[in-house]
Length: 144
Image 1: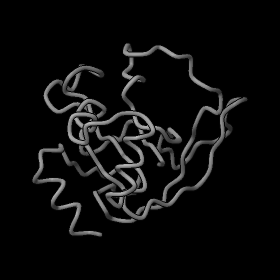
Image 2 (image 1 turned 180 degrees about the vertical axis):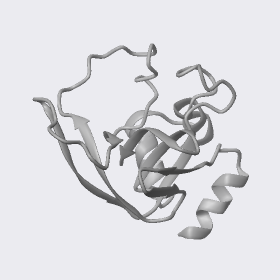
Image 3 (image 1 turned 45 degrees about the horizontal axis):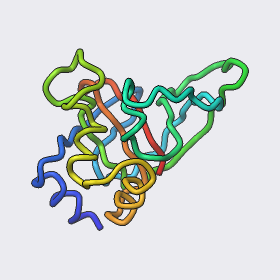
């Protein structure tokens, strides 16, 4: 499936690479890393944070040394065999959500949202999404 990643890049998705806390995150390159995540269900804010279009999955943050995690948070180890690594926002790094966000780029590219978007990503060979703010910092990570 590695060939697919190159095709996706030529089709307009904003691919990226990050080097963070001793890990390299690059599209379709296997990576194992420690994470933290809030286990509480997020309130529904709809379009405010683009929850209405985001792919379904388990949302994580990369953290190689989480220490003691707060109540209702968990830490662990995850391996992604073929992640899709995207810029968090292609044109306006300070604008978190909007028409140039990673969520909008995926929705525009695949023509679907939510669980349907996750199914299309999995059918394309991806097992996760890693978003990158700059070459040294990841943001949202989704295990599909």
